[in-house]
Length: 105
Image 1 (cartoon, helix red, strand yellow):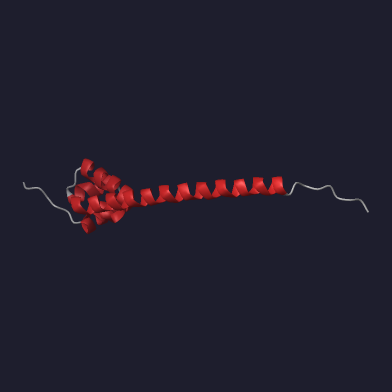
Image 2: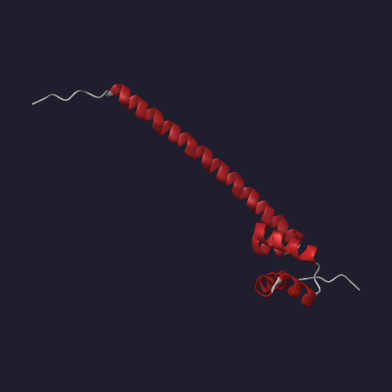
């Protein structure tokens, strides 16, 4: 028996059907091994539909995730710098304009 190749759409259909009708019954219906099913499920949860594609599709998805993580890191660093800048400005303003006591009328 040869190796069966599944399209991303077929994999998604099997994952959806297993959620509704049960994993064991669905896997028996399609002749999919449980290890294969759980590997698909993990890839789908991590990478979305692109994770069910061939290796090139998953590589592109991983690369996109890496790019987004780098961008997020840069934005977090910029935000931290801006917050530090605002704290410094607040401190300087407090030194320049200390609270003055109000005059009683």
